[in-house]
Image 1 (tube, rainbow, N blue to C red):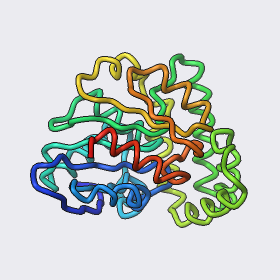
Image 2: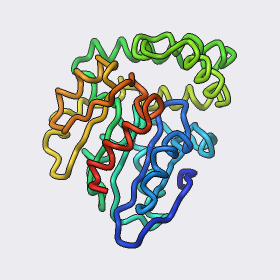
Image 3: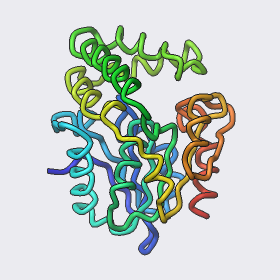
Image 4: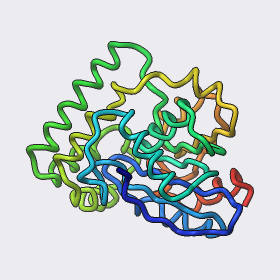
Amino acid sequence: MMLHAQYMPGQPGAPSLVFLHGFSGDCREWQSVGEQFHGCSRLYIDLPGHGGSTAIPVGGFADVIRLLRATLISYNILKFWLVGYSLGGRVAMMVACQGIPGLCGLVVEGGHPGLQNEQARAERRLSDGRWAERFRREPLTEVFHDWYQQPVFASLTAQQRQALTVLRSQNNGETLAAMLEATSLAAQPDLREALNALVFPFYYLCGERDSKFRALAQEVAATCHVIRNAGHNAHRENPAGVVDSLAQILRL
């Protein structure tokens, strides 16, 4: 089994760019950024429970990583950079730390490297469980209205919150809930030590108004790019700034 994805071919010999979206996003999320790098092949993946991969069930990170590996093989992607946002960034970090053939570099935007104690994990497990229950039972417009009131999204305007609520409410609540539980931050190990031992380039992008993840970026051995005029979802709030950073990183 493989994940649904959209593939855009580039120049032969150049490394591919593999894009992983955040929770409740889909393969379209990164395209406005990725299409600026038409010299590279681009693979925009739908994570399980999302978009064209809605019906693909997973029990945890191991299943997601196995599906990602199979998807890369199916597209004959042998040399690539992983670019992931939030949930997609956490998946990318997990893959990078476990090792995967052909990975040239890692770019994470607003991805958490992992909680550091059991109390924090227990609290997160309870919180994600409550959200999952709401995704299963309540209208998605109501759930996402509250979702975007969380402190991490404080930099969004009312108009941006409304637009995201409408967009994300097109999802399937049951499969979102299942993916939220399967890939909860509570289920992710603390990756700091493994990330600091990576032997390939590791870059971290965060919005200048995203104070939580700017602080987390200092805890890993990554080169940090701060995206101006942006909060947690920097590639949506300032796509040109993210394109500029990626161009510097990839030297394109």
